[in-house]
Image (cartoon, rainbow, N blue to C red; front, top):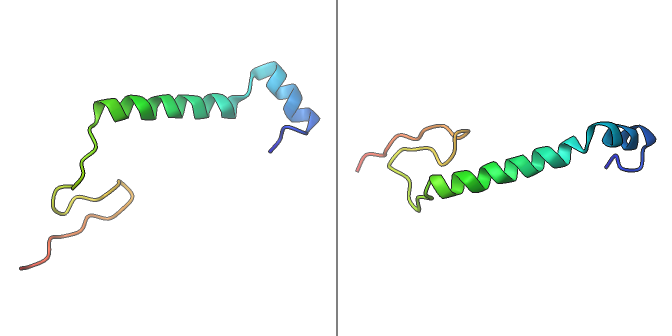
Length: 61
């Protein structure tokens, strides 16, 4: 994305490629969490699939 700009090249030379470092750390954390937190094939009733989805109430039978 920014690799062809002299300013970006100078910043990378001075400070390192921060976006690449952040992606690497995020991948490492994701791998660590995958080992610690088991994946559940079916979530408990009413539990959101991820933290950004609203909680759904169980339906009446």
